[in-house]
Length: 264
Image 1 (cartoon, rainbow, N blue to C red):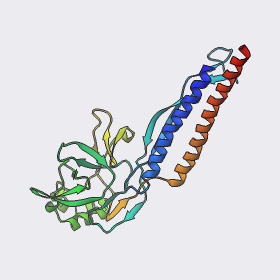
Image 2: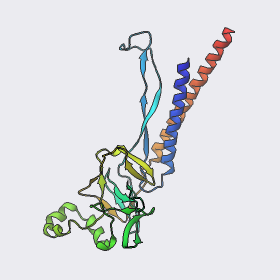
Image 3: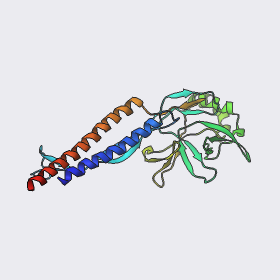
Image 4: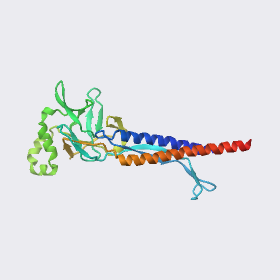
């Protein structure tokens, strides 16, 4: 009987955690570049009743389930056109802008390409709304004076392969010129959210790799990846599972009270 209390209470607690993830996804439905999270459950130990551990019978009991982790998918979301010349939408999955905090030098990664031109002591730089520097292919702050902004946007919109074939000799001179760059990871699922749609690697030694052929859309932003219909379906499923778990606790409590009353 104690096990039934435990399994029911554990199920209710895990459903509460899943509800928190769903509510966070819905709260960020209008947040540019937001990537929704998905709760992953793992089933705890199952065992056979009145038989050997290796036997397969219809009489089985388990210890419930628990939240293993929350998974973030970095797929491409719908793109919204804007009028800002410093807005960029990433058109490929598992790719990020690299940012640097000018105060702490901390490196973070984001898919939110809503940038602006900010003035610092030594010139103008491309920065985020929170004041972080956008880094180029050399992991250096992108200084806007080094290259005409309109020319930089035009080059990104052209097909990379055709440009290399037609202007191979001319491009050799500009290979090291600063440009908007993207970075990726071998295992993006190991990125941890630190707020403001920014992520940092969870594991030491997990390094970002420069994307050789970045696909970007200028004057556009990637919308939130939250699918409202899908989240509401998950919400209904979770609410029902939560009510069933509480019903299990209630039923176990009623059975315990009945047994105690029969004992006198």
